[in-house]
Length: 447
Ligand SMILES: *Cc1c(COP(=O)(O)O)cnc(C)c1O
Image (cartoon, rainbow, N blue to C red; front, side):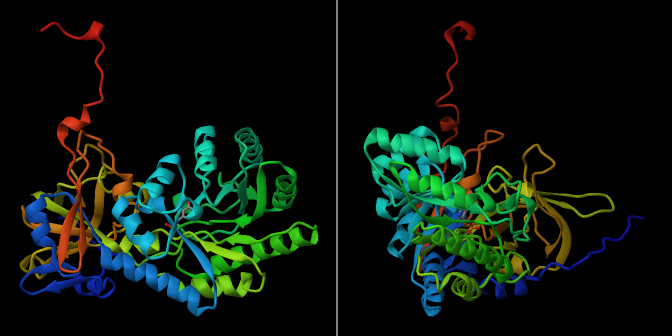
């Protein structure tokens, strides 16, 4: 006899998941809806896997975040962290909602520009910007470069002088505060590759103020992602405030503090990070400093706006254990469960499947890796071959992290807006997978 499966903590039921995901509703006739669109209709027409993102949810959450800042009496420049979702349509929507862009590569910079975000609202973060990327930033005349090392500062200064331009710089400081989140998404503790150590920041700022081609304007930080309480933010902002005061006492002007991103969402039952609490932490520590404030949220805005639609390829029975539900989506589409052990809700699309008797199952993809797993021991309505499901909260760090591993073409993408939907990226054709392969003549087999 197999041991019965015992849960350390039970998974939320379908009803509980829908309660924490108000952007989704379950219609008795049409099944799972995102805004006014039945997801089943999209899956039927587009095939699966297919990403869907809700314009209304993006707008609502962007507005909610800006509202919380305004409510706290803060005037902030918001920059969307483009790495969370770099689709042009998403960037256009957020640009219209008042957001600039926080980019971490030349490609993201050009994407943001292509989406109509003015250079004056683009900030450039990242530990390893190449000379070509820094030249691009200078040529485009973006708002600021968040410099992450002494070495980068010298290189940027040199390139700026060479090209006859000047760049505003913030020093990204590592405040050595543990965000209390997953090790792979913690960025602000000592020993981490990101930023300048807190106790070396003032010296480097002094250097920046003296260098030609760069204008030291302030400090930036970003301590990690999926942060759910205000405490780590407050601790980090307190250290930033201390640094601003010390810098001014040293006779150097500081006019900007970039508070980073990192606000978390409710994937499972952890509760959602509160924009009001985040705004409160900013106000409490930085509100009285007479600096211009900036934020760089990504996940909080975009993650709940997206789902990944998939179809059950087959059920594989396991003697004495939980069956494998094998989906047509995989780790090459959505990497987060494999990379971070991330928990994502999985909800059937059809109204009948949604109310099926729950069972314990493992939900996996077809890729040849044991890590290709969406859920290990999950309580789910029983799913038969052919059933369609939505993997929730995939609007951030979803499609952007896809690969074509196992020669699986990139999935299609759809935008829902009210009761209408449109294809925003066609499914990649299989020929595109080898279109740029070159087989040298000398090794080609004779035909
Ligand atoms: C990833 C990142 C962000 C966004 O983080 P979220 O957790 O998605 O809000 C902001 N700033 C920088 C520098 C980043 O690297």
